[in-house]
Length: 81
Image (cartoon, rainbow, N blue to C red; front, side, top):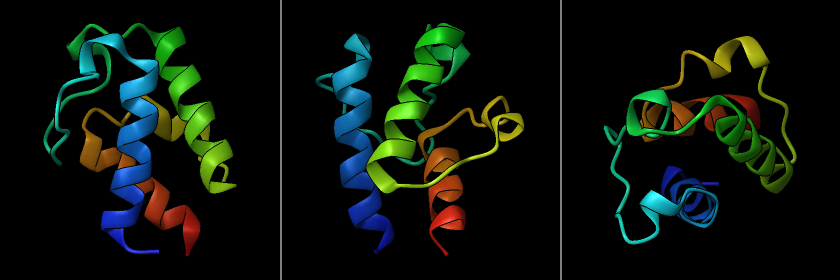
């Protein structure tokens, strides 16, 4: 799966789960964690949806280090290899 395909699927999940992002085109440097007004429980929900969509498991200790959309894509790509 290409990074672009991963980004498209992930963007749909983020836009569906995070109301402030429904009309935003996500870029690599778009902040989607705490600094963007996303509380920790909502971020956990988003990450669980991403894991289910890609049938992967991202270690929870890595979640807190993911601040941008690009960070999330990097983690997904790493787990898909």
